[in-house]
Length: 417
Image 1 (cartoon, one colour):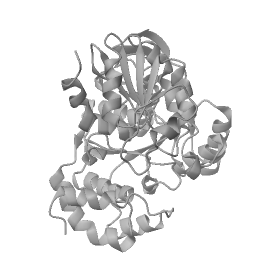
Image 2 (tube, rainbow, N blue to C red):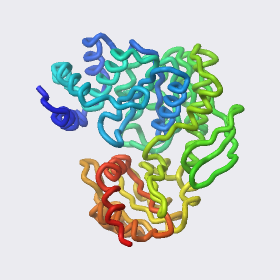
Image 3 (cartoon, rainbow, N blue to C red):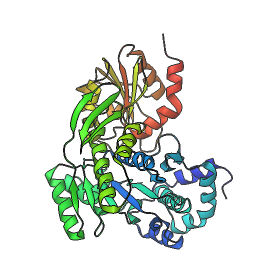
Image 4 (cartoon, one colour):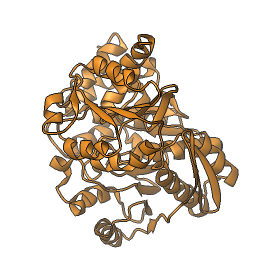
């Protein structure tokens, strides 16, 4: 059995993927464990980008309203524990280790992957800790995702973009179909998506499932600077922390979800809780300003859709802007870099230690960017170039996690005068 939390995390990490798709093994495991995923009311959040931020907005407001809120998100940004939280407090090492030892025979019996193990742990934790409501962020797609064994009161789909095409399909319609796989019979759905080809898919599936489909409307931008974004939506004036304009759509979706929970499903959420919860929320790694003078921003824009969403926010940063970029092998990195080249004065491409990470030279092929394979040196070089500007670190949430945990303090401590 596992003696330390590191042994358990190493065990789960080695089970990143089985190469098999389907929910039967996880379903059998959950049945054996008493189906803990049905013990707590929940909300399901899918989409190409913005899932984590939308989940965090919901969590913050529901917590502000006095509820104990469980949240399951991925990937982790600081430590593996941050995938599973109650009221934004990570599950402890001790609890993870206890669960690892308790459920090890089940993991082995059904050959569960890391994400499936995380799902078992999250559902069990939320049940045993008797949270009032749980928020489950989809990991990949929706139809075959481990979270899709829940029965939510409400389903959200943030948006649809071209990502994970090897698994989800190579058209927006196919990807929308995979995301729409979370739609259950008679469970209402709210989406921030606007593209007609995707909405047609959602309408069709909702008709089949006899589920109500609701669309967010357009918010009104009021003010935008390097520290905040102010907008009006559904009668609320909201001041969000951070300069990321794309958070307006995520917060708008959260508002519509909260109003539906309140007005149709009986949850007690005041107008004051909605405003205060949204304004106090901060989701790390999403256009997060971690240093000023010079400005250093971390943003896990990990696909073309995500990069497109941050372009206007990049333009508002102190100039010049130097970007340090890396990505996973299965991403359309050329399109991402081409978009960044339009708004950044300089781009340094690097790489990091991860089995899905791409090589810097492959990412940079044919593009007017610099290559510094060593990530620490790339970050130091980027920082040297922005004494009066901004350093943007982007391209992969896994890399953002490495920067936060290993590199950020070092490059700041050893910053050249």
